[in-house]
Length: 392
Image 1: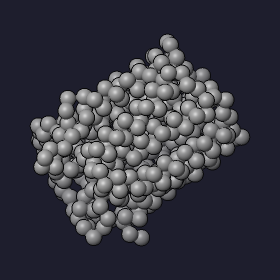
Image 2: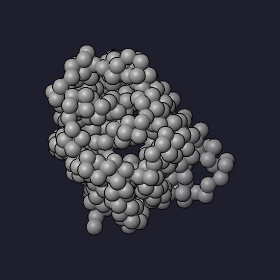
Image 3: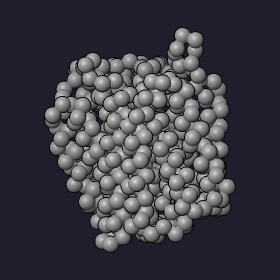
Image 4: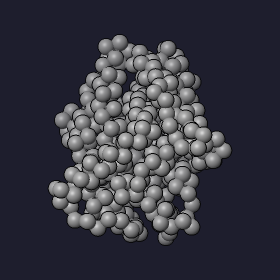
């Protein structure tokens, strides 16, 4: 099997997350309120903050492929841990395992893909491959959502995680067959690690890279908070659990089709303009929902936000990686994830607090306001020479 096809299969298997449509409801079923739900993810983000750069360094100095293999195995273990969990601290432990696995993968898998395609110019472009990965990811997630909603409604929430562990383990086994790429073979030591980090951070002297990172961080962090409200919103709108899975399946299937061709928008309008338009697409439905609109149409509006996020993701990754070098690519990817997790650490508790203290609609409206601030103050522009810059 060609390596590019393995990347697509990895995206499909990675998103056989049958718990996607019921995760927040699962935590609420075990008597967690909004503050506790958001605290589970906040603690995970804080933990990820501390392990993100070390795992990125390991990837750059010991090998991206090895790092991804470690990631897939730890994520498999985390799903099993969630399956056995029933208390707040058990959920925290499972989430910490998941974040550790994610830290070995985040940035690194993107760096591996970018470097593999760069070293094999006969393959499709990075943005096209990334867009197709998003397509297969959403197809996988769509199928899993339909199954997960049914299983949760008829057999119980915890079983959903045990089922999700099966494709996670298959993904780990498939990862063992990935192609080798040309990369650094330096041995890890304190001095080289320190110098590697310093050299990587120096790339932020590029003002465009710094402000692009801020734009991505705010957008991603706010979307992480908004996504936590989708399931409670649907239950408030009177949607039964089994139907939630079906709605997720349809919405994610449509998202997959749209995301599959997101690279064509980039080719036609350019990275910067497409990224800014998608930011606006996320703001409008968030404002409408935040003003108190509650119905099945509101569910559609929520998924418009999800679509904007998925279409924007490969484009923003391409913009980021266009501004860094291959030697620091995995570490810089980890730094990006670190900053994004720092943003989530700040924003998730705010969303949880306002949802409990006032209402879910109020929290959503505040998140929409943050998206608007980001779109205005970190609007991405192009210079006459075609290089990216932003205004702030």
